[in-house]
Image (cartoon, rainbow, N blue to C red; front, side, top):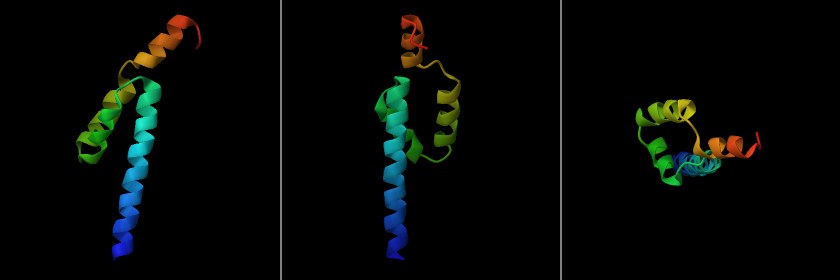
Length: 66
């Protein structure tokens, strides 16, 4: 049973690390990744980030990189 909790902890840390990478590339503050831990808020925030304007993407378009 302890192996289950160890795997859940490893999976959670991995998902938070991936979230910080995505938020960093999008130009958002990395602290937003903490929303992934809160049930229901995580689903809402994924939708908010998916349909919001990404600051980093706007900078790339203005510079002609995209």
